[in-house]
Length: 361
Image (cartoon, rainbow, N blue to C red; front, side):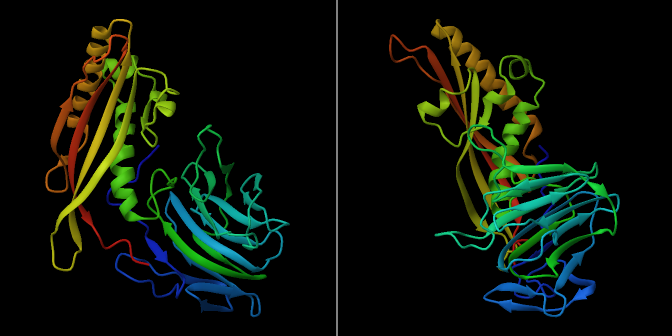
């Protein structure tokens, strides 16, 4: 996993009230692709594209690694094999194409992969528009995610992946030339081919959850320290979405659970609020088991000590921007004669200075 750098953001963002005049700073406007400048109009904060005058296709320049997020609704279904989203990095190309039914969509490169069970015309009860994320990296790997889901609790993947085709015309594209579609939102970045766990559509979530919580998990998984490398399988170093005994027991011991328990902003650094200082409280639970509690205790202590050493030397190293500013370690104690599981609890506090000007739409 390649978590997005703190300087990376969605370089073009629009809620489709007008793709040519996006709100906010650090926001590159979309331009109509030559030959596809027909009907498009604001419609309830969406951008409705119809085929009356040939439809529209919008474009921005692409980088080597790109991500395109879009949500749309069929008002009148476009023709089968119509291209509605594309990334072409000048070497490789991947397209999202309309399938034959309202419940399917296709990812097309050198081969075709199809996703079913969708509701692209939002005709079902309590249905919401689907959110698609198309990514293409410099090696020609294309992926299409649905509603920001990567995999479920049983590790079943929920995205499509194909090898990309050859380039035809570099750029990042969206739009339709047949049918009628309401485009709900479109984001793109030319700074990386990012999965939902690497860059969220919310800059706040990317900073607080992904770059803080998930980055700790990835740092510990990559550690070369003895206990982290040899005693703990990478699958046992996880973000603690669920810390109930039922879920924790499904992971082999020893294990490390990481969880963000609190985030605060003590002050805004400027009157305009363009930057904020944000503090993050990160909890690590190192869990070990042994017939001899003392040995479980010592192993857990070695593990949590290596966690601290690794994070102290690898994270929060930029003073005034991203700093590790405090910690607290609670040592477990055997309280019951039959107790064989030891859990040491390490709390770390990070301070980050965050640019707030890259989230407008």
